[in-house]
Length: 231
Length: 306
Image (cartoon, rainbow over all chains, first blue to last red):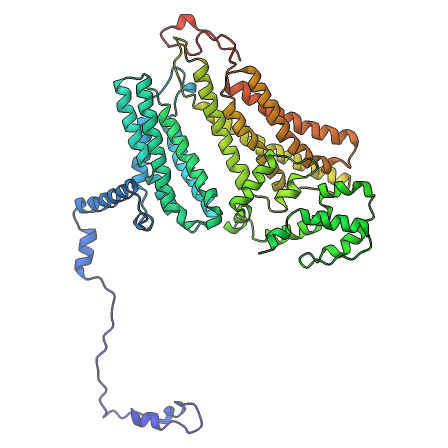
């Protein structure tokens, strides 16, 4: 090999002289080539594709549960933001809409919100708020913001549950005051939790512009919960 | 940086006064090179219209068009194009709201506050807030009015939210569209000095609706006199913002058309306020025996008159 390199032309390109060099067949050329192939070992395929269904479901459930805990005790952790999923918001939205369902009046026009209305308000409201924060220059991604807003409906769903239980006991002034306190507290919790997660990704001189629609969104949901009257 | 202070309206006052004293003086301003040739022939107008120039902002209409061309350069199918309509800070939005609630006589809302940076944040969220405020306040007021009556059964009246939303968003977007089209058409016939872009008109209308939010909250008080006084007050404030914005744009036109335009603006605004009050808030003094009748009492159906 060294002989081949040395016979290159003096003034020309380095390997120009190689054309008239032939490697003798007597010189053995041997070695080992190992190509690091990124092939999955058989064990990897097995663990996610062939694992028991229970494991798959439990993994997702644990992720959702961990996020619920994050919402109830909001600390500035990025777990909620990094691994977004929309299962939790879906479950919360459906359960809230189902619980708001029974509040009809004699004519459909004057009753409480129907299932589809609650659904649309929550999802359309979350999309509009996300678009608003992105248009104002926020750095959070679309689905991350939807995820946070959806998960922060959890305190209000708890409030709805409590309200329905209190209404089972009676619907006088005392029950109204209890419901009012519970709903106001949960509304404050929801707004604070979502602001804690979302406010950091906004430009500093527009924070109030981003927080106000979130406040309005949870206020509307709280109003729907508070004015629920069973038939 | 000092540029924020330089953009305050007071600077133009000084320049205009100085130029009035000495019409042929050349003006040198570092940040507005395009103004130098304009100022010299701009001063040939009658001195009586000087205060109107402040209203029109003739000096900076060129700059406005220049700036408008520079700002929205992204094609309309990109996200950045829509981001230019949300290029406002918190203090700017608060300033614009303040300007719509306290109209200064003689100052044009668009020239003073918008200044070629119309935003869609204000109109959209003020309308959303107004929709929910009217629905919630109407519901609360009806609840308090009918509270003592034995046959009253509280209902949330959720359908009214969608009706309120349709009305208010239609008003805040279709009326500016019609007004903009009308102004464009008149501009082609009469050379108006002032013309507004569609977004600026939407902006003015959106911010002028802000005064109705506290008004709607105060309309919970079940006294007819109080409600009408509140309505007159808020109609006066927001109507004057609209009138002071659009009067300079139609003033050069045929006298009757100008008056008709401004009159239509005020009448539509008043219709919105009166309509909302009449539809969402029950009248307090009329005696409603039973607005909602349970289904098993069909024999005593009484229709509610509004």
